Length: 117
Image (cartoon, rainbow, N blue to C red; front, side):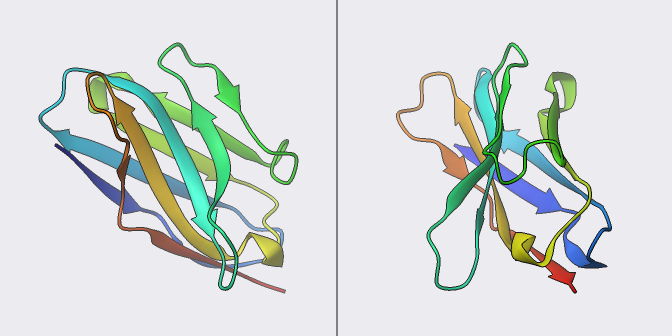
């Protein structure tokens, strides 16, 4: 079972930056994909960024060029650097991790990001 602890959310003005972190712990052999999702009030949860075990990344157009995902395999940690934040980036951000041998991915508890205009 994987436990995920996120940190780094907060309140920032439009144009500012935040860095989210997520640390995975528990019983698992290795991590395949690590990703970030977000959910704004009244909206469905959506993918923000994902990174594979080999370092391949993927972003939706809404954040491409502004957000950067990275991972530290030695620390089982994934980061999300968010630059040039916009009010529409306001949401609860969730970490998601898929490990080898697990049929399901694991979710963090979420961290609030609020961007004021």
